[in-house]
Image 1: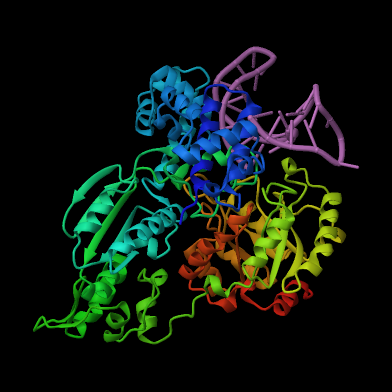
Image 2 (image 1 turned 90 degrees about the vertical axis):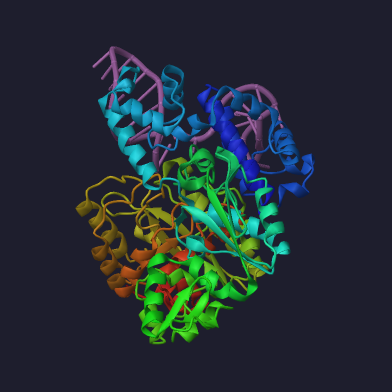
Length: 608
DNA sequence: GCCGTTTTCGGCCCGACTGTTTTCAGTCG
């Protein structure tokens, strides 16, 4: 169930953006951004806190605590409403466009009255933009391509955002139904979804439909029917945040400013204007309907083909004899697949990418699950850009039942994090002191290194050798030519102290393209050197992505499913990474952090 | 607006890059 934290964090981030546009003091702006992160990353649900307790949240002082309290009670706070009156919500959406920040967004609004992306594109096309001071031909081009990038995910929202919303709605509808769940691309674990499909089984659809259109999320009712009703959520930046009950999205590159705000209004992360369909079917056809509405279309075509060849007919109403129209099965998905001679196919595989043939041969992989994870190998603390202390992170990891946990704060070359060797060594001491407190969880001292353009990383060899674990990631120079990027990553793989490559392509869904890479070459290097590739669970990263995981797996690569958590609730990000890993057909044996500690240790310490 | 075994006031993460400039503003990481 969604916590108040994410919603309020979104309001604070939105307020920070509006302040930035209206020329507020930059330190004040930063305070609200930091407070948003503190609130979103706070482990306790705000709804259970009084104002004094709210005051204890990191980066929340007396002033913001009052606003947070008001927001928890009323859903907003007065200063935010004041600014919302001055600047239309659409202006904030302009800031989704890369390289278009608060100053330029305000300029196009004030000078040209532009308050949405369509109008901005039109202004680019007819040359209006060029009249503006500070807008030259190059800026025009940057905005044009930026709009294309944002439009690439037109109307789509991040899986985490959709999952949070879908689960929350299912929770509220379930008491009125015999069964209720979400289906569609969300159930298949796709990284973004264009709409949410909710399926319910009930004898009488009336109460369900009534409750559905009465949801506070239902801004517009698009269709109102007996079996299908569609609503659309409000087009408001703070309508929802990513991170499915798991804290606000961290800054994309652990950078402090800018990130928290883009999480609120940014890219595919907001759920504003999202269509949600509710379909109600009789309990007897639940399985057939769920199979049908889960898709994908391509998968269903393949399965129905199989049915036709067997003299059968499959629809959302059941599996029938083609000739007699006699119903064979419809109650559960298992029965439907089984009667067609197939293993039950996990939703994350239903893309017509070979799963039907595999199911027929009884050769579906035993997919990795969240329960199979024994540890997390990429986490941060407030020593760098996390919002939780070492103790809070360790306690939360232990709470999850992990057998091991690596703390991997940033390294010095990411200058704004102000990491030093002294700080790293002090943290290692602290970690050593805590070992006795966690007899059932091994504590690994790691670091997240930065891969320089030439493929080198922070710190000399003798320092690297003393870490239990080195993750190495690209945090800069995203636009090098493919040959250079490829060489850069291969060199990182070849570094004997680097055991995991973090978020290998550096993409941010809807906001930044992946770096240009010869992926097969990198995968081969990773396999040859025994360097694991990360599946980063950050909702807007999911990097590596599904199809690339499969390519890499075919080449024998080992993977790490990581949260990259910068706050306690974000440890849950492994959920999204695991769905992505399933879409890459991974089994626990291919995932480093599904292994027992002894085997992980062997992997980390073997001579290379 | 927040925060403090380097400050209860005076700092705040800050350097690089790029495009539009002619000395800088905006944006990003």
